[in-house]
Length: 231
Image (tube, rainbow, N blue to C red; front, side):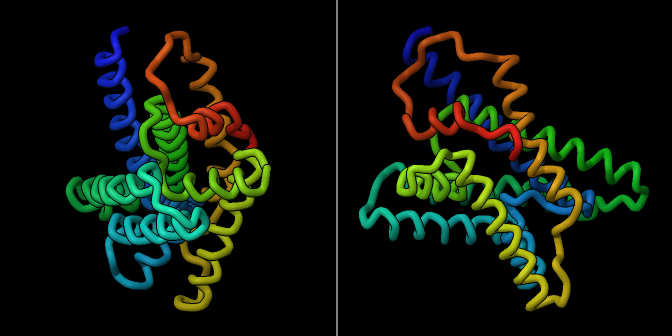
């Protein structure tokens, strides 16, 4: 495949990944069984402030970009590009919730809620896999994890597990402090933590890399190879 064709292919795969990851994010909120760790803090902030989930996600991801810049003590294009990504991802989340009306989709039947949980997990795993395969810009939370992993000499999978736990605990603490309850944390949160990594590994086994591509970010490549199936 020619370089230009490879670039177009990677970009298309990456954009598809963003839409699927955002869809998974929204479906977690629809099932009301617990959000994924990725948006546990944005979800509770949206609940507290009345902002849309997309806006809260953009703001939290933006803070994580600033955190990376502080940890690096320098400006890097790779990190700064996470800011427009955060805006795009938040906009896609709001496209689903507001534009397509997913915010009003709150089924009461348990079987439908469980089905939505499975669909949310599948969309999240598939979206994350496609974004890794596209290999353009990391989302801000994973950027923090990658940086902490590099500084602590821990694998990405190990640091990701710890970071997700911190996000969940922070979301629970904010919920208890401002709402009197840990909103958005539930069995779905645990289910996502256990299954999303396995889902990504599944797709990596189904579609192994077989073709040479353009030079890629070694950190992102390392993430793809080190995703812990237990997270």
